[in-house]
Image (cartoon, rainbow, N blue to C red; front, side, top):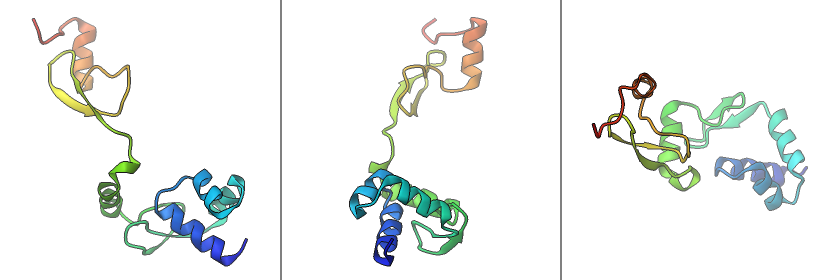
Length: 118
């Protein structure tokens, strides 16, 4: 693997691309890209570019949250759901099973103390 490919792989990963997308961009196999990251001991924070150790992508929670705010298109879209017990509107990742805003409301539902339209 050439040094230019290694630099490009790191840059693309910091931009949020998957291993498969990176492999296609640098004309390598997906397993070569995966093994590159598994051998790599030092990484660079995706937000502030500070060198970090381990397999982390960000140096701190602040950098992580800031990066995700700047890249909302990289996240799954959250949908608005109305709790079946209290009627409160809340946001959650798409799921056909999510009905309750909290464990408390789920417990009320199990005990029969439910439904806000009573």
